[in-house]
Image 1: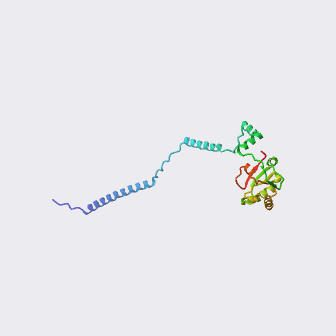
Image 2: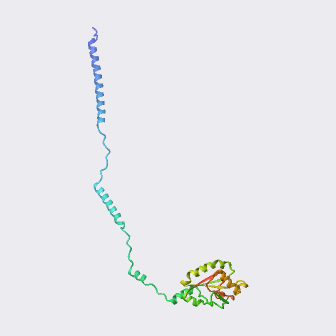
Image 3: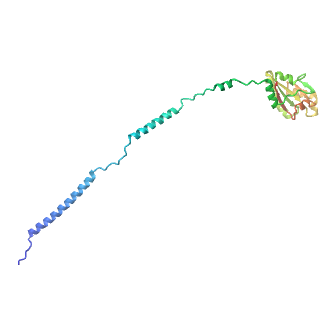
Length: 230
């Protein structure tokens, strides 16, 4: 039996076929991978889906906004208009209460005491006499208790002089009631000299016996009382 020796041509042909098959398979694999990659690149990514607005909802929202704007416009006042007073109130404002003199005086007596008259004067300077009642009929009377050695009285005196000069013609009557603190202040000449030195031009009543002082229940110097016609 003779051994078959492989022929070189057959062996070479077989090798070529095997290599060709391998190359073909690799080519197909590479082509498939390229196609998949190209498809992945070419295929667009789907965009994120956005919810479509509901036409009816949009219309309702627009309507609410318009109504809100209208409400704001209506609520803003064009200008403040004063409310007319009611007829009853207007009538009450027109009718002022009429108070009689007796009621007016009675109301004052409840709050203020009535002024007392000058009592048992010891003399007068710048006048022959003085009556509070007579002076108050046409004037407002400013009555001051003082003494010429009183320090506070000396400080007040310039103001009384100014008031007398400024308002005497307008109905202010100033009168001084000199009630002495010391014995030498009872002397008429001393009081008269003090009046001249202080520049006093209004009437001064000497109250050496404290009669007027006690009538007013006075307790200190200086003390000023304002007296009107009532």
